[in-house]
Length: 224
Image (cartoon, rainbow, N blue to C red; front, side, top):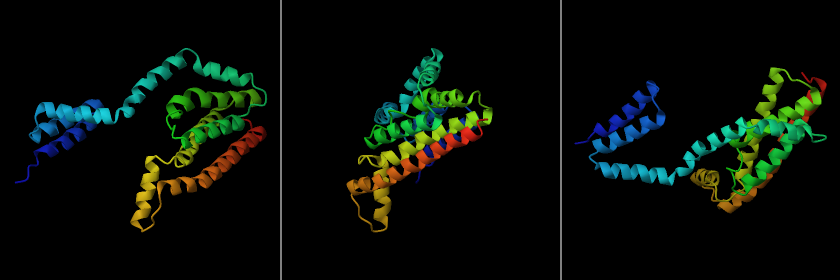
């Protein structure tokens, strides 16, 4: 006879999220409950949880990164980034973001996708530097223009990562593409997919660069 009691863990997850309890606590309690209802020894349940945490421990790195970024911001990280741009001649929003785009794409192509990112780089450094470059050239910005520059900073990071990481042969997206093509009878090695990702990455870099430089031109015409 099928035992449906372990499915109670799903109900605990739904109930916990509906009541807005701590997500980590909800998932942990649901996992323990599911294991016990499946007649697993308590120590074995804890062992499975510990193994899963150890195998996916990089997910928890965000809990270390965010406090560090918060402390750096509290002690003037954004102000120093703005001051650096203020001392640079010829710095514009587009040029700053094009440099970051190249940096992001190159490092992603080498498999170093965690070197930069939205939380650890864009918010505390790239966006403030782009805003400082715009204010240096055009003066005080209105809210819409400032938000547009922030959005372009985030988009630049996304473009650099998305099209750069596929060049790295040992990345999950390459395996996903390989598996999807295999379903339709197209057999390609990860190396072949990696090589063919290079033209796409170059096109993405050129297109995003054109968009950023066009934003510079538009800001000169309508700075506010």
